[in-house]
Length: 116
Image (cartoon, rainbow, N blue to C red; front, top):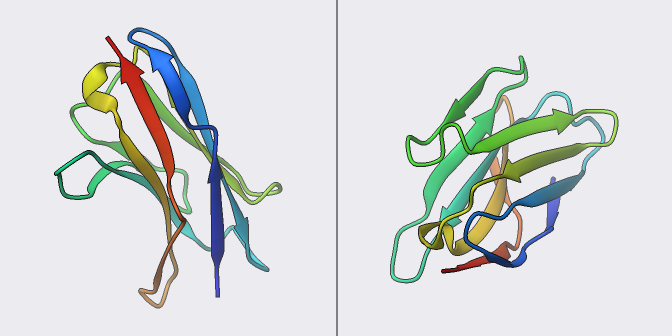
């Protein structure tokens, strides 16, 4: 079982930055693929960025060049550095973990609000 706890959300003006963190309660973090998703008001939950066990990164087109996903396996933490934030980035951001058996785990989410 994997428990995920996100932090770092908040209110920021357009053009500002935030860094989200997600700490995993798990015996071995390095075997998990990690990702950030987001769900805006009235929208479905969409993938924002993922980072594989190998370190390979993928980003949604809407955040390329602005967001950076990273991981620290010793701290069992995945980060999402968000720069040049836009009002359309406003959403609840969820951390997701997936293991080699195809199981997925979600955090409770952290709210990010970008004012114009």
